[in-house]
Length: 155
Ligand SMILES: Cc1cc2nc3c(=O)[nH]c(=O)nc-3n(C[C@H](O)[C@H](O)[C@H](O)COP(=O)(O)O)c2cc1C
Image 1 (cartoon, rainbow, N blue to C red):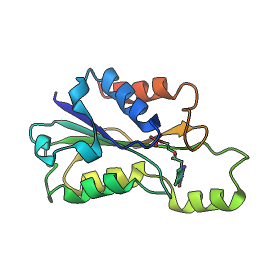
Image 2 (cartoon, rainbow, N blue to C red):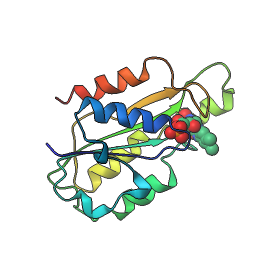
Image 3 (spheres, helix red, strand yellow):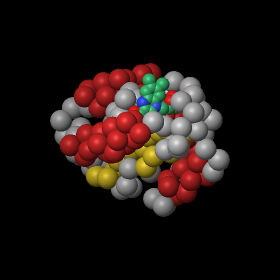
């Protein structure tokens, strides 16, 4: 099955998760691609599309959203899809008002998945979020393994 893992990453954490997912699925390096460098023509022939973004202001990154808008209507018909994000772990260091905002506005993975479904894709994995300890990382211990496990539930 031809699988493509697209990611955006400012500090490298989402890229690490994307690569762990790609490795778990046996993807080639060239099929794990930064979303801003991805040529949309390459969607043809892809059977499984996985898209991941850092959560920024409760949403996917601008490049991720731009890519989702560029997918033609029905462009994911017959393709399997899944979405993930990275996000800040809810610790006591996060102020209460921000926790409240997060509880209302959420994270990036769910809206990415919804958009991929709207473009015709069939969701094959529930959206997943992987935790960073600080804004710039590192990833919380065990998240690379959890990402690989998430992807492997597909196999
Ligand atoms: C400007 C900015 C906004 C952010 N907004 C959120 C947010 O709304 N919710 C959240 O959980 N994390 C938020 N974060 C933390 C990011 O999710 C974290 O930087 C990201 O997961 C790191 O991934 P990357 O290294 O791939 O960029 C924000 C970080 C920055 C710098």
